[in-house]
Image (cartoon, rainbow, N blue to C red):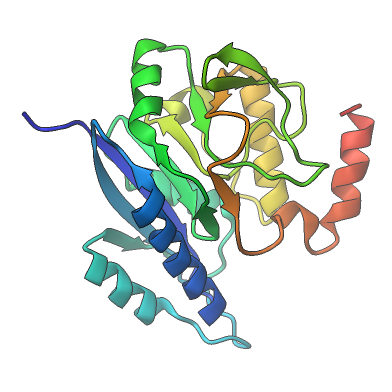
Length: 240
């Protein structure tokens, strides 16, 4: 009997040699630590086509590496990329009921069996997503409360209850909450999605109290390009 399939969908940004190394490091960490004991994992990658004239573009090298791994991939076509568009394009590549959505600058730090998350979501149709990664920055840390042994429930009124960090979602997530906003601001795309999950009273869990994945590459988008002060001001105004 064939095992059910989970799509592991990776958002890749080969804009520089450093970003290519992020992808290699992510894959290496997942090969060591990510399992699905009662499912098959199908890896799909969406590859950005954006180029920076000041940096070496590594698209061809990334494709060669992906083909060696036997992963399915597809190019994103917009010349200038934004987070929302890239996430939406990646989700569109998936065809199975559950999706583990991963940014290429994440890195797995502890063993995780995502079959446990899928089984829990099968038993509890009201669960919308399970986060396996989140920022440990003091201003972006999440708030949780006990759900059941081994799982915590995210408090939607707390800081950053949802983001582009590694998470398991249903394929129907977009139908319920909508797609990411395709703005030029990474941080705005995330804030808009937070508004949607709050408005729809999403049930989002974490697998334990310590993230299995961390952001191992660049600083969070909301803290780059002058966004830090704007974000902190907004959090204070919201009383968070």
